[in-house]
Image: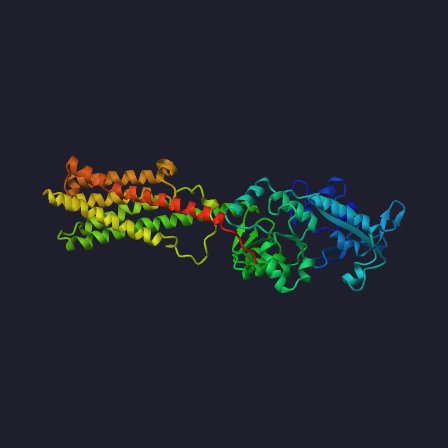
Length: 521
């Protein structure tokens, strides 16, 4: 038995060296070596002379080895496939009757415990058969035994599956393992609920295309599937409007990986073919890394939207102030050098700091956005517009007040108020829903530092005499500075009020959705 595991094996696992090959075969090889069956020593005595490689349709692998004056063939693979080709079973006195039903039941019980089960058989030949075909080589076998191994999921995978579900991502297991093994592991991970349906490749082959497409969104576990059926699963989900990510590591996975919108290959055990077909490679072969990538991708996208909203609202505010001032009988509030200062410093430093904004608390509780969704979707276009109009309006209001009291510093006040409006905006838009008090002012030290530095630079432009002629500014009195600093805070207050209405509207929608009956068709 153990010599068969070592010889019918394409992996290499030298003691103290680097393991190479399929993880299942490495495990079998290590188990045989620990029992005293070393592969190099066995191959020196019984060298491999021919082989019939593993095939996903047969689910078997056969190797032939020279043994004395004859040939011994070892076959391993799926127990149900192997038992179909066995006529005898190995017993103490040699070959005896085959209790196929009992062996199959034993394999089923082990698989139900989440174990991966492999059957082993052998056959003696006088010489290497002239035709290395499964129909002749893998028939009339003598059953040797079953090997069961546990391949426990990593501890973090169950939590990753839970996060996927809360994020609107539906995990589906597609495996070549026994259905009972797939059910046990999927139930343990939370992919499959108790009593959930497991569809096998054999069942899929009997379904009409219409039947399969009708139920494809409801199936969470597929077992004993072949490469063509993996493509069928991906295509069926896509036909239902789903955005599919497919993971895999073997050559047989490559077509399905290529067909999916996002193909994910394993970096350690993955084949070159699967990596070339994929759009993303996991260097640690860990499913939880995919969830981390989703989380990070959502954070980056959120921050891009925040940056766009911040910069465009500020630019619209400048345009409103410059265009509307003449219509209100006032001179243009900003000079070109001041506009350049705002675009370089006020937009630049806090805008860069927005990229460091941490993820929002509910980032993994949102449904995935549609792939064709505009960056201005979900009301951001209107938010940019009204925020920009408010910035421009406050700038003009400060200018009007300064001119109405005859202050010669009206232009510096307008310039400062525009700058401070943008500082309050960048603090307010750190979340579309959560208030600044919930997020915490100091949760992004980079942004706090950028805002404080911008404020100091603005004061330098106002109060350092050497900079006054460059930026055409004049020192402000305490009252004027207070007005230019405090009136722009209206922007922060209004954006916070907007978030309150958004939260209330979302809560009402969630309650209405929970009370709305679901109609099945």
